Image (cartoon, rainbow, N blue to C red; front, side):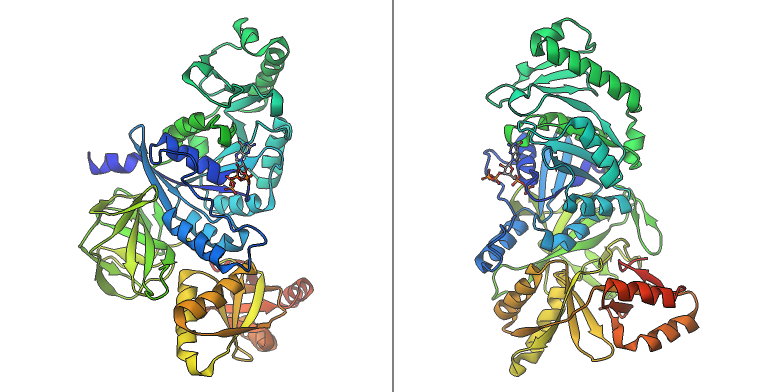
Length: 526
Ligand code: G4P
């Protein structure tokens, strides 16, 4: 197969949802269709159940699962599909945001009863920031839920999406009869045993055909005709370009647990979802079909064995071919590195890879040389963009609890921050280190891992802060005046950028009023 064809057949995407909407179940059904797994139940939930937050075995178990399911690759209809897993627990949302920088498209799973939930809003916002094409799957139609039109309105109002239904449900809950596939003009019937067989799909180009009544009854045939007519009036015709440009989001309905509507979703997905897209670097735009290799690290996973502190760095191939044993430039360090055993992922199986193409993810054995966002090339000095840090919401001072182990502590903190577990800020006024997290669970994870992997022990002290915001100002004199006036609230992030530590929402507003020319940013890239 030619290089161009290899690129065009790749589909690298992520599934995002609020916990419990059905992401794990949908992933599993997709893998079953792809033949990547043979039995249901093979994909373990990567959730950390509430109440288990102090159970560190649970956290370790989750880390074990998450390395096994980080990338799930399979072939389907001649396409090479790579699903990038995203942590289910919202305390690990930063991980998910970063993984979303490596996907070319996303599937958003919504629970029909719950509609759009808070975590979905955040994740979709990250996708929208990058114009990532999104398909929505409304799940659990075997249960009673919100009205389908109401859900479409919610997608618009809460997620800012422009939804376009490509399938439409016939009832829900105990009365659920199936979906009409508007895109393919097919009726897909749901049978009481929850099996979707070949026989249950009927071509139905014209819904006015009398035969429709035979399949779903007079009342439901009437409702379906009316609703599809309404859809055709309200929504414009589906154009793949609009979806690829992030302008519309196709919507499908189904029930993942019953494997219903999943094949329709997958068939449409492999047809319309984008192959690897061009990537932005600080220097220039990189096209996937460029001859020379480039890629970036979007995730680092520490070894599960605390005695071996080596890690696995996940690299998305952005252009050219990645080849085993070849020399590549680590642009941040300015060093040439060679990887003898790069790994690839087919479902949960890891194997050595000789060649990887744009869209693929390779796992590189790392002894501490990589940080999130690092770039590898064949020699060109490039730096990939688009891995912002988000302003954390919880803060604590980290203190050394064992003076004999200060070196170990410093190293541990450094490496955990490189992995992206949390963010470190250096308070400029009192010289203390502050750790900022998205969720409280991360503080426990850090303490536990420092102890078990670095033999260091830490103590937390409260830091009553509201937000850490990156700041900028066009006028250097104003910026200097700001920093002098607010010296007690200034910090630096790990890259040395200026950060303002706001004590409260009120403090942030009044400071903004005082310095209208200073810009406050809630993510590290602006
Ligand atoms: P997540 O990864 O998004 O967090 O969700 P997950 O797939 O784990 O699904 C959450 C719960 O919803 C699971 O039940 C799962 O069985 C159920 N579920 C998924 N899809 C459907 C569906 O189409 N219909 C119905 N009725 N339920 C669905 P659980 O009781 O939390 O876990 P389990 O004991 O079944 O594993």
